[in-house]
Length: 443
Image (cartoon, rainbow, N blue to C red; front, side):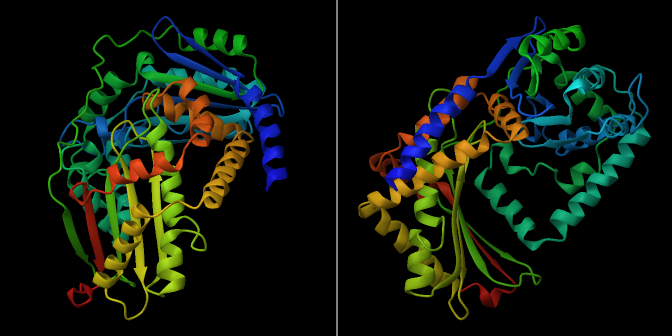
């Protein structure tokens, strides 16, 4: 173990030097530009991140951010519908887009000498989309079919929607990214154009270019293609509804005859990563591993799966990458013949015992080593790096926060973990859900 740590420490020093190859600019129109130089292969990734996602949608218009993402592949003033992706493919590249609660992003991965062409096309559709009502109807139907396949046909997905809506009753995080079906069905041309005209603006965008490039060259291209687009002077301040203090536990039993195996989940409101204040989020990363990481070494796995055979599956999870409140969750699938109430009681005993007992120093060091290694491996993926910076900056973090994150993780102590566990594990700020095929299983 000592030798491994020494090797990793040496690698980490090299990684730190490489991580400094991040250059930032701000264009006169307010657009942020981030360049991550990596000259190992003649490939570049261009990602354009808009600081708007489903949690920024107007009330009653859920799904409009995702529908608009689809529509950006339609016609512009110089491109026919579908031509954008066809040109990317013809140049040996790939492209796609995705929508989340906090951002919408578009990307292309191409040979480095095709970057200018990508910028030319991407900047064009920032301001020059030419939509018709027929376009909206077509893509609206595509999104509805996507919802049918991924959500309506999945009892697990439907249950997650209900649990999230119960946890976030004021925040827009309680509304699915894809939108509520009845609201998606009503999205029209005016809705999409209003959203597009307001939010798809350079002063609401972050350009991340990663790969075999020179920062000054990227800046020159960005100024040429994006810098000429005027800023949106009506862009609103990004203030979203927050959760009020929660004063009572919330419980849901979700019944669906398609459920093949009853199980339980519990989700707590938890701190997210904030600018200059990432320590609690880092401690929660360790907490998830200690309680529900590997079934062989986690507290839940040892107690419920191996010692008592109460469960066939256990998990604890946390992700701090949110603009607003994050979630810390548990999941337990009980063994045959074990009632959900007994499985939940066993889970609560593990949580209680964890809060009262000492954390194993060897287990802490093992997790620390794993996290150090994962941060090193992440630097080998240019697109992953572009995504890491783009998502972080879209969620109010800074380049320095991203660079500091590996060190913040390494600095976590047992006391940090115990403190954040005591703060988060408050049943008054949690939703406990049972997923069953019949009421008879809800016992």
